[in-house]
Image (cartoon, rainbow, N blue to C red; front, side, top):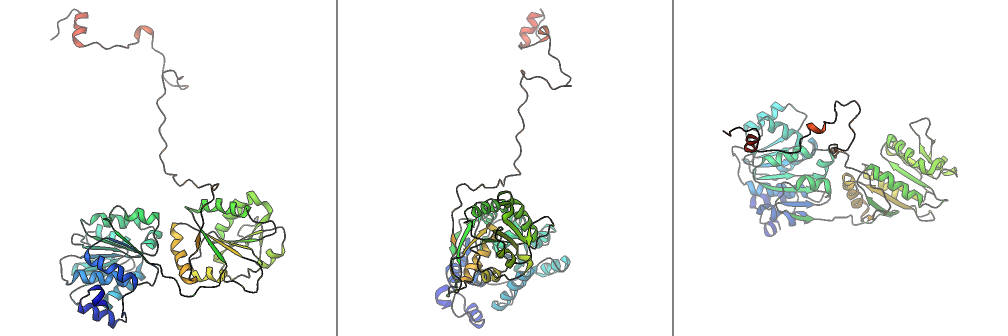
Length: 432
């Protein structure tokens, strides 16, 4: 199957079948021919879909042999664990002993990695910050790079490593660019746009075969945390007076921020579960919240690391998406004995979209994307704009108090300009 569909070498076919990969997955079928052909690609696919194997087979096919004077493939990944995982998979699939691989990450001594590069490397697997640091020390030669692979690109953006990626990409004269990611968003697009060359976009949707019995789900895609606060206020205003809502956030500090924001509109109707601040209204348990009629909205921090009995709550709102997908899914499981309909609303920024993708894989269905309300106030994210300099004061404006300035006499004012010849005639002198 591998040889027929993707025209891999006999050596690579033996490697992939020995590793237990008997047929190519969808992402591999759709990307490998383009990778081997040298085209730039952006591949979007969920975790576990075979992205890493796809680009490793492409790299090994294009390199063919080793022992060049400098690396020919640079693979950038988010962290040390991913570096080690990719290197392990390369060793599993590479039966060509001449192709050498070196890993670069932050923990060991930089000198050890400099020595490894000096001994020779054909493939370098690195975190962006360590690769950039060694490049600036002239230890990483990018002159022979044929392929630049950025794996888990959305995670690299989430970790704030866009600058080293951009610097490394700009330092490579000409190469093939391969982007593999679980999700595409504006921040990632902004990072890769300057160096991509007419890329092919390949997107794979793989959901679990079994749909989970969960509450009705919907999603709002927003720009930042401040916009989330404004959206939360609008959503809570639409709730019936008899209904209760639980609002989930990541930390107790963020719970206090949300409490102070929405309390301006709802006063005594909002509380926090185990608040940090003495003056914040709170409860020690969800059961106490349910019994209190006056309080309709409860803010809960995920860092409390507890499971909750949410029966009787009509609306569940995730202002921030839990890093642990299982925490989210456990809250969403429907109690078939519970009467009524429970609605679940989530808010996600660009950096949280990958978590949403993982949740969709787990529950086996897509989450409906809502349009933002027309009256939603979008937070101003352009705080770093330069303030325009004021125009110079006109002649009619009064001088600043205390300034050393006085109006010229009429006889001293000059609103003309004569040529040198005219001045000579006026003075009865010869023009030299």
